[in-house]
Length: 459
Figure (spheres, one colour):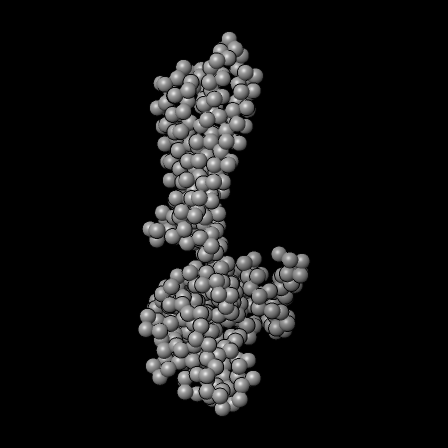
């Protein structure tokens, strides 16, 4: 919490203790909704309710929208239907759909029935789309002008129908509301009032389909450096638009989701305030990794009979080093691949390019790591184990086995780090799952298997 926010939170706590709602309302009226929302996580349910009843309905609506999902869920659960209806009526349709999407269907329907018919229709249409698609994040409030109109007509449309969100351009549609293109607002100023919109329309509009995944939408808008994108259906009918602030929210959400999955958890963990629920989500990812490590132990145990007990004990001591180096190399590569997917720099069809680049990097690192491992083991084994226990020839053989297995393990881990994200993406699964614990566990198994096989041949 920033110093200024900490000061406000202290003032808020003091204001809540006074038990003077008029004083609390006056204080909150001077504070941005974002600052109030930031303090909600640290407050009790009773205090949150007092704040929402003390501020203006529009401010209360802003606060609810700005809350983290877990906190917002708690706040919404504590509110009665009448209060929720008042707040939802103050929200933009896309924000209202987000809030209603978290409620039981019966309660959401009851709130929708109390809203203005036009607003209710817009929200219901948005609720039909998956929240992670373009249709789920778009706002239906657009300025759509007939293609037969002039600049003067368009100005009147803007005056009558300008949405609350920032407006940069108007959309030109035909008689069936099929999108033709856009006209930037500045063109309405610099062109004569009698100018036909079709004469100045820009047909190179950034367009996304309502069913496109939100991550693909982010990549498209970034690619064309656009401030917003038109959302259409399969027949090119204009449905709404995605603005730059929506884009930032989605980009943050996707980045957060990828980071959480790479860390071995899930974005759903942030949607709950329950410690046990969060623990269950993390265990869902951790327990399979534990069973995966049992395979690593199995590889070691099955290899034991191939070696003298003293030699096997020393070989086993260096197995964690092989596994860690392979796992870390795999994570480095898979993270680069996943980042490329997220930014659009790497597409599903660019497997060959990824193999060439990342394979070359792994190939450059592998011999360096192998030489260092050979040198470390060559020095460490004679120091730690006396020659009467382990002959010099055996110590040298172990060093060679580690030195050769290390580059092989890194190359194997590198290939997995490249192939797993592409495989998951091809299967329609978030490739971030291929990083973190999954890559680490898989590479441990592969690295130790390579190590034991190499040692069997050399030692």
